[in-house]
Length: 421
Image 1 (cartoon, helix red, strand yellow):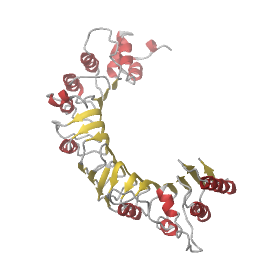
Image 2 (tube, helix red, strand yellow):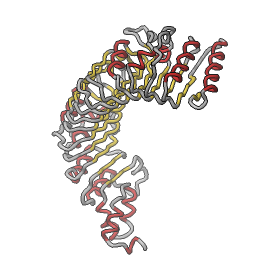
Image 3 (cartoon, helix red, strand yellow):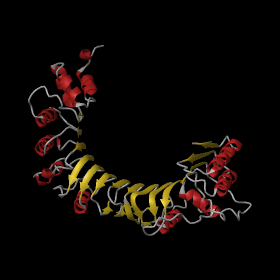
Image 4 (tube, one colour):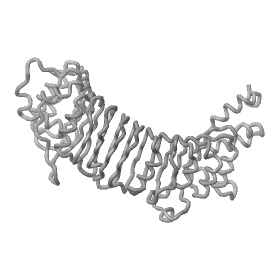
C-alpha cells in the first residue's frame, strides 16, 4: 500500500511525528494533501545548519515564522539555528499558548549588544505561558527577564551561561513549581539560595574559583549533584537518595545536611576537602549502598595534607549497608595505615559489600595495602568483584615492581573475584 492510498487520518498521524524542519518542508512539496497533513506536526526542530544554504533570499526568522504559523497546535519547538529577539517574539506570539516544550540555542554569551536589547530573547520567552519544559543553551543573563510566573513549568535546564546572582534569583522565583533543575557550565555565580517546594532533581555545575555557596530548601529533593561549591547547606533531606558533591577548582569547607537515612548513592570528589567536612559526610551517610570517593587531599587551609588514618573495622561497621565501594588513592591509603587492622573482632564481617573498585597510585606502604586488599576479600563474605586499578604509579624503585607482583599474586590466588585494570 502506498502512502497516497492511506486514509487522511492515518496520513496525518504518520506525518505528525516528523519533527526536523527540513523534512517537514520536503513533505510540503509532495502534494497539497501532504502539506495539509503536516499542519498536525507536534514538534518542529531547526538544527544548527538549517539555513546554511538558503535557496532564496528570505530571512531565516521569516522562514521559521511561516512554518510555525502553518501548524495547528505546536507542542514542542527546538531552535539551534541563529535567530533574533524579534523573530522569537513573533513565533511565540503565534504558538505561545499551545507550546509545552521550548529549547533554544541563544548564542549570546559574548554579545554585549544582547544586554541592551529590548525586549531581550529572555524577555520574549515569557510569552510561552504554558511551558512544561524550558531548555536554554549559551545564554547571557546579566539583566533580569520580565517573566510572569510559569504555572506549569516543571523542568528548567540552562547549559552554558554567564549570569549574576540577582538574575538567577528572579528566574527561579518565576518557576516555583519546578521538579527538575539543571544549571550546567554556569559562571558568575557566587551565592545561590534555592527554595523550590516541589523540586525532586537538581544538578548544579558552576565554573570559576570553586568558592560558591549554596543553600537549598526543597523537602522533596531526591537527587542532588553539586560542582563548584565550598559551602553547601541542605537541611531537608528526608527523600534524598542520590548525592554527588565535587569541587575541581576550590575546596569543600562546610557541608550541612539533614537526615540522610534514605541515601543510597554518595559521591565525593575534588582536590581538597576539609577533614571535618569529610568526616561529617561519612557519618551522615551511614545507610549508603554505593560510595564513591575521589578526594585527593585534606587540610583546612592552603597546605594540602594526606588523610589521617581511618580504622578499617570502624569504617565498615559504620556503613553496614554498603554494597559497592569505589576508593581512589587517598581514601584507600587512609584505610591502609599500620594500626587499622590490628584489632579485628573474630566475628567481624562486611555483610553487604558486593563490589569494590580500588585505585592505587603509589607503592608506599605496600605491605599494608596488600593486607587491606586481603582483608576486603576475607571479611567481605558477599564480595563478588574486586577491581584494582593501577594509575600513574611513577617510581623507578624496585618497590613498584614488587608491589605490582604482589597484586598479581593476589589476583592469581583469587582469580574468580579479582581483576586488574
